Image (cartoon, rainbow, N blue to C red; front, side, top):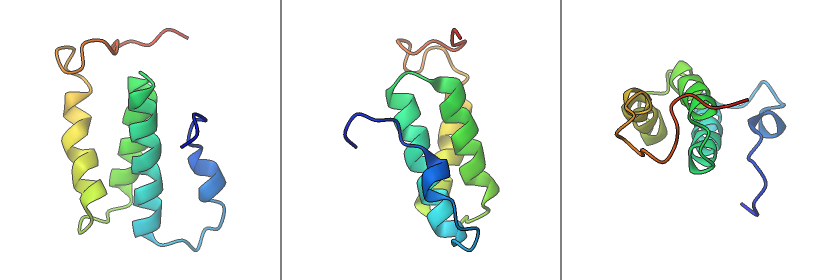
Length: 85
């Protein structure tokens, strides 16, 4: 990553991609948003990762583990819970 935000839409153009690849892309984009302090966007992307139902893959499990943490203001307290527009 060069500093640009990861845009999952760019990588998810073909609908024939596997759920594993889709889960990877959503997870990578979610981690990118979290690193940039965008909890709400990270949550949305982790939820999309979980929706792939690719439960055999670690990014699915990591996404499920991170989702409840995103609502805890004591976890990564420097990232605000409610983002400003």
